[in-house]
Image (cartoon, rainbow, N blue to C red; front, side, top):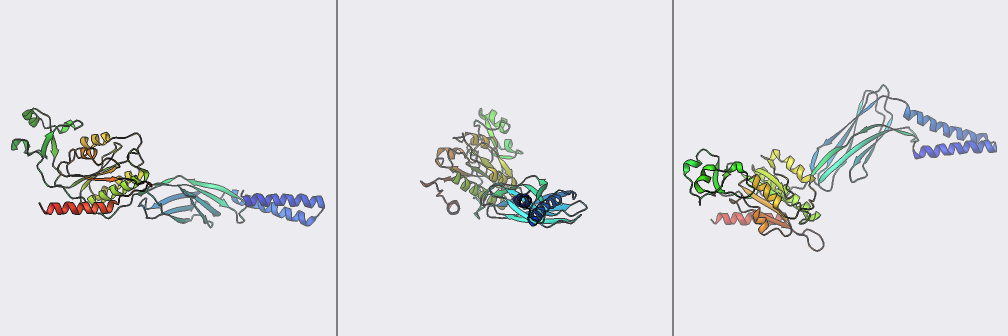
Length: 379
């Protein structure tokens, strides 16, 4: 029963009692009418009308910050009678939710209700649960007749229109190592280097190891298709909440630019997770999903976990390091292990005294691309 219904019932009972006490038939009649109206409304909402089937569809299921998604609610009345007047309340995380009203759905018919959401920030928006209530024409009574579980709307970080990172030049990383050509013939690698702690032992080149009396690691030749690896800093010790959002925008933008060019891309987070790989732009969605769900990682101060991930999944090609305050020196340089063919991009995201992130990544990225292109042209 609604608040209006309770008020009407109370007024009816009061009028009935007052009429009997003072002997006023008109007041008694008014009380009986009000009570009868409430009883009628109650019967309307509890009378069985068959089952109402619900379905929800998100169009689309993934969006980018600034875009809107449409939520379609499908109502199918499977009984022999109409559904009656319906009130739909669908939850939307961090908002008051969406409330819609529907006229009666005829028996064996379907009706579609739609509303729009436009999340202001990246993340996962929970849609639901949906509750459907049947109302009487006077709004005096209501009854919940159906529910629907939650759905997730994934909101990816904004993607800036930037240029793809410059590709590494073809450099023989093993030029200082004397290895007979026949030892390299038939193997899918182009260089050898000394073993470092954390390297995958399956990459050991045993013939070269026996010749040089030191463990030698194979560097696979990935020059046929460009590779770009992006390291995104998610450490709470180095990144504020505002800086994290800028880092994730930068990571999404670099991944999209590189994948659009045709590169194979990988994402590594400084909490030790990853790599998340995509062969081309069509496979980029899972990486953007990861960025949408990222939270600040507490209890991690150094980059040891990141180094372990990079060394265990050694790749040549380009490296883009997007780091928090204070990690543009030796720590950032150490991430370049295995990427010697390409000087890594390193961008630090710092907060000013007010807590605002002062770095404009798009402008800095464009300037760095132009600088490297100019330097390459003069070689």
